[in-house]
Image 1 (cartoon, rainbow, N blue to C red):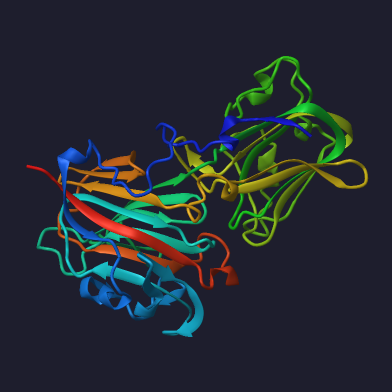
Image 2 (image 1 turned 180 degrees about the vertical axis):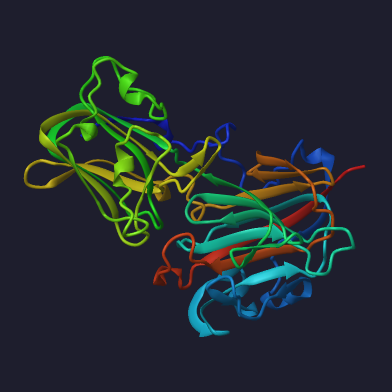
Length: 420
């Protein structure tokens, strides 16, 4: 079965209207504006013996209330020029998992911060590079946290700007102002699969082993249409081309799904309501699937669906894998499949450089020398240590024994100052 597919399936695409990333040198610093504008102020290359780590870095050595692991010096290991923050399945500190969490003894204020690292290759882990004061900030200033990247396997990058000083209580729980922006590389919210050879069938199935909830929007299964097919993100897609027939919206079509976010809340109608802003949200665990059964044989020429949620430039919950199949009367036959782990943006496969330009005026986030996000600096004005951490978490993926022994590997941390 041959398919014409969108080019995004073959190359990583930025979701924030920035150029495609090329393959960059794995060891050179990628400094904004060029290396001649900067001078190295501090670096950690992790080339020394493991015992030397405590000369420069502090370890947590205790339990963690907000995550699923305690964190200890023994989980931060220097070997072969790399720092390995290792997750282990072991009971310690009153928790069932352990990991590594370290921060510099020295605090820094402003400059360009970069870290070259590789994610641990398992779901439900936070692979983080960040800045946060450990001491009381001066009077009149805010206690902040700057998450240069909270990375989630295989392809998620998350940037966060937290104001920890202005806490408020909402529904009995404390919260604080946060500005977050997430990026999923190698995937898009809109998928179009146009068949070179049409398929005739009564049953169609979409499935995914995505590690968390699947947020699946408008689903379209179109006839063979000489006039072509619409943009998947069009709110009037079914009317955009003459001759279109969307089989999922025919009266005789039956729809079944694997489950729902809330067992009592059947959101499957959102898959075929004609609205691009609504979603079916699956259960969290196990395989997620959607199956359509038509009233009679239908000949399929094109498949479209939307996934994730959010807005252009800030899509969240995008699928990292899926499979589509049709039933030939006796068995399911695969039509197409996609898995970001097999592509360039499996961040556990290769090292990438995560960068951050911190000035009194601005906060600018980078990946491999390409700008991701730029914000005004409203309250981050105090010196702060550099933090590196691995954490077992419940909110991104399923916690399984695959985590045991997985490690975030750090090549270096470097801090630059602008030349006078």
